[in-house]
Image (cartoon, rainbow, N blue to C red; front, side, top):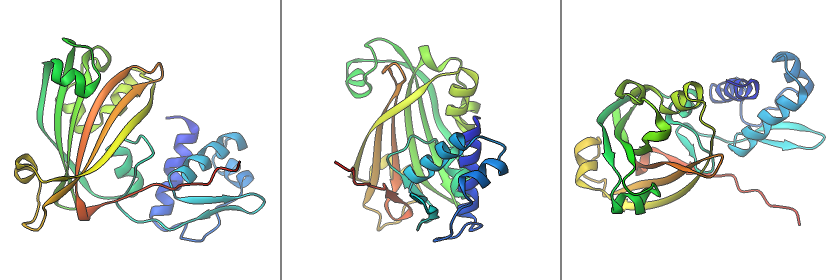
Length: 238
């Protein structure tokens, strides 16, 4: 993990544990640089990420202020793994892999994923238990030529940790589409929904490497009343 990532993770945990409360002023860049034995540039990079994730507001000449946040607040603009979210937001979770296999990309899947026709891919379906209830269903397609020797055990832990730390993949960005869908039979079978749950939040993502190659397609389906999907929109000066 890079130094700025360590700083981001530590400050996120302190914010969500209310060590730094709403409207608190974070230590100055100089103080944080001393605290984390890093440069001011590294601290500045970490603070920029915290601001983009909607946790702080930076004011020139004043400092970084903690702004309103909630548990299970899922940022839609970032590209963050579920395990990273669990660590930063501090909720209890369990992952169960219900499907793990290899498939050949046909025309329908090629159109859906952007993968080459007849290429090989991993097909993974995971359900996520949060606070004792299964409320998230994640379906992933990953190109096998990039995902290496992926295993069910890796999928149960963290796919991104394996891709980035073991395979050194440079995962760059994702294009996301968020819709409200009707609950499917699969949702009813695998998630702990109530009779009142008629809709589900679907987040579809095409994920790309730094060279613009699509290597992952995922759809995450979330119980509607369990999460808040937020993005901090900032006015661009013209």
